[in-house]
View 1 (tube, rainbow, N blue to C red):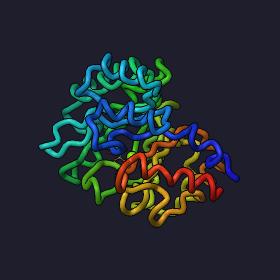
View 2 (view 1 turned 60 degrees about the vertical axis):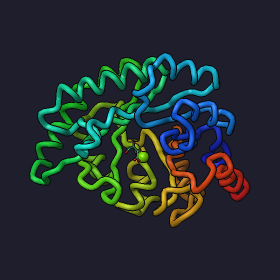
View 3 (view 1 turned 135 degrees about the horizontal axis):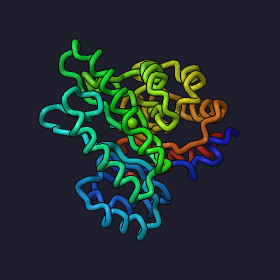
View 4 (view 1 turned 90 degrees about the vertical axis):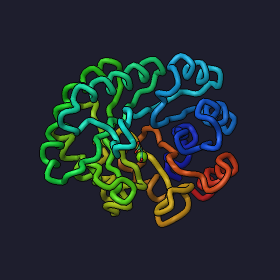
Length: 269
Ligand SMILES: O=C(O)[C@@H](O)C(=O)CO
Ligand SMILES: [Mg+2]
């Protein structure tokens, strides 16, 4: 039996951007606690004052493990600003907002969202901006023990997003060369864009700062679809990944009822 499946429950963090989505955001925290979660992660908590969020987390006995930088203007198609030339000042403001929330909540990871590049000829410059922006903020996060995560997003869900492949992120990380800037290896996106999950996990293991799971191609409970969950968890285990595992899927029905996949995973491994 692989460690990843025996201690799975103690390492999983419920992504409350997607899970318990029938409830108002703040109410997803006690709902996650009632379903047995000790950890939650989310995307954009910024509509809720940080003190209120912290009070809800404390009341539920749940720890927030990770948040994202703000997406920017959704109507203009933005999805983060870290790679957008001319938006460096707004990126800094968004980053500081994320850092303040993370520090106040005790969250140890911030997913720094790169952004959508409307004109492919801007890509080269965007990569430069991305690297420079990340270098400029990495140490302020490190001072608080916070890891910055870079996540490749698949081009079907997020056309034009600067980075869609984990191999590309590996090159960017080599250039940034800051130990607290890491790869967010989301099985869903990596399987869609690159596949070869086992070998890719082995190759990128030292770079991986966080893992997320969902079924492929539907982004449902992760024991469904084309990826064999037990195998992937064992590969992560063998590669030495011992960090948190984000459940970032859209439940097919009721979130709590759908969690029976965890019992099946434990029984099968
Ligand atoms: O996979 C995703 O979509 C997320 O992890 C995210 O942070 C927002 O794009
Ligand atoms: Mg993800």
